[in-house]
Image 1 (cartoon, rainbow, N blue to C red):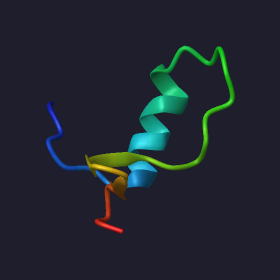
Image 2: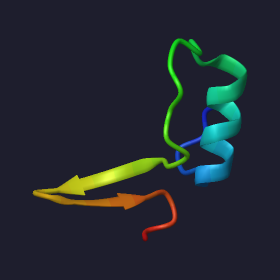
Image 3: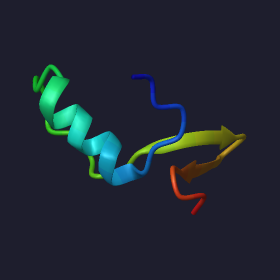
Length: 44
C-alpha cells in the first residue's frame, strides 16, 4: 500500500521501523519548503 499523505506522527513511526538509525534525527517532518520557509505534514 502506498500512502500519499501522512501525518508527522506516521512518518516518524515509519522512520523508526525502516530508517537507518545512524544519527539522531529531529522530531519533525518537513513536507514542503519555499525559500526560507518550511511546513510540516500538518501544514504548520
